Length: 445
Image (tube, rainbow, N blue to C red; front, top):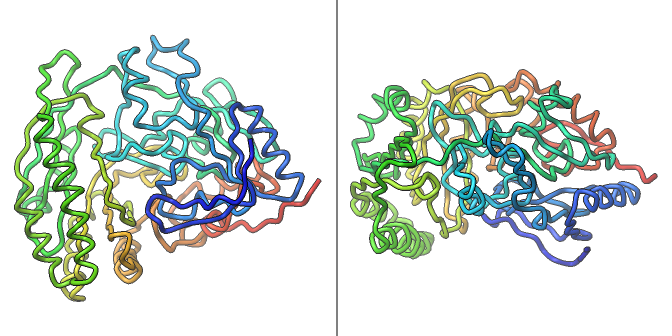
């Protein structure tokens, strides 16, 4: 199925494009046909997920592949071992219902579940918890269509040497059509959310992340308070004490989305009210203590659009980096309405993972989507770069291949795999050319 003339925009409204044509394949064979046809016409191909990346990683000037039809559980023959194969277009928010019959769950999640499983893993989406890697670490096998139109499988018993590249491939190695995940038994999370003095949290940062299954905090600029979230894993048969429906709606919808949207829109025209809004958000955020199924605790509904930059730095450098960002905001007199989010992750072995071979802390900065983030983001970026920062592939940054080669020890090995699976650059776009340092034309054949 093909279409043309439709303008595609990402969720944060930082990127848009009108592809020459849009194809919506419903099978791996249809993906193969689309890739071969595009290459034969000298066109490039980009698969898209849900558009939740803030970078131009999914921008498709030529042929856009919408993988929505490739969804659901495709193979449950290894369910007893905790492994299921899912279509690449499956949304994360679909997983609780899909996995519940098997008594399984993702080992870890981020706080947004609108992404597709292939988009989330390909861009390095992660949650928090020093004992857990990003979503891509849960992939044990995958099938993808290469830039030459070949359907290949990568697994422990079939081309295993490619797994560290394919798990987090930026969409540059092939079009993922399905992934096999190593899941865990369904579990509950006991959540404790409370405001604490920012300096105390920074002083005890490494102890806090090492002492909890999942720890993160938010800091609203113009305040001295960290809004901490500590989640403890419990077995499925533990007592469930979820938030009441009214309480959750008031906190997560009325305040966090409805009132906050109004405040952000007003702050655009009257930036002087931003510190007042931040202090009110601080006051309205009280202590919450509840226990629920893991997806209900990990995920927060976000309807206020924003733009985001996130950097991964060595774990122990987080407190110093955040203090410098705080001082920067105060020195510049900027009025920042969105909080800064701080998380952690375990080291992993995926070549382009932001947590590759090091314990990692993440600092994410945001701006309301109607505000220009350039000056703020670039100044924060410099702070992170000075500390060996690696930018999140799906979030705004200015780094290029020259910088990234120094940040990733296996960068050139990843490029060698890319050259093998997509030798003519069919899967490239301008963003990938910048971050991978490869410029190619696609000759018709």
